[in-house]
Length: 342
Image (cartoon, rainbow, N blue to C red; front, side):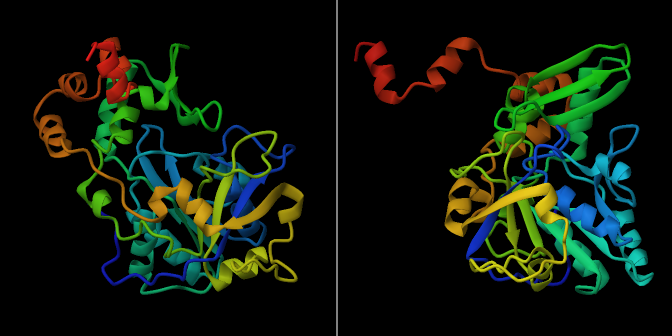
């Protein structure tokens, strides 16, 4: 079910240019997704006595939005989590912080940001929002079932969806007995289901927010397809500066011009950026132009998931195909015909 707001969302005009941004090597750390631009926004809000809201795991590895008031507490909000988070309590906490006159940064999927605006009755002074270039969010129940099978009775210490190199992410889990699990994300059962569109809600396949016109002040994601100068560490953030508030904060106009004095005075000290045309970002990030395509067997998967033990469902739908099938999948039809002598 979508987190979309009850009222019609207001979309900002698509900017002509976007930012390719990354943290400087002396402030970068492996916990950040992409180029770590969310940390830049968080630091600005915290330095001004504000509260930062984002998705974090609790001790049972259930995902929910919560507030953070220190940079140390913000660490739990960093990093990609490829599943739906619970936002109900956070919306009330955001409202209370704004009513108290505090600045708030709220980061989430576009439908979650739109739902927040709906809950608040519109945009509020002091609120800064950042939505994500979202490829869909599997239900928490699918992830819980996968993690339960993976832990095999052991306690879970940590999980990460984006461990390792930026372009070759690994899913890793550490367990209480000192053992661990690490595989390329899209070679894990959970990653395969996500990547194939097999484990996504129906609403994700009809998402009205998968477009260059955005609902949030900022849009953040990976800058896939970026061809400019690259950072020595980490990846490259894609940043869309969508609103007047965002332009004032960054000094970026969105039409290729630079404002005189950004509110975020720390920007040059902790990150580097270059402006790129919006079209380049859209080419590398299809979710800026159209929703994710759901797998044709998506409904059958969920019927199986809801009625059968997870181990059976995983084996039937998410297991890695045998080697001969993987080899054939990489061959073009013409190469297959040559191998068959036809």
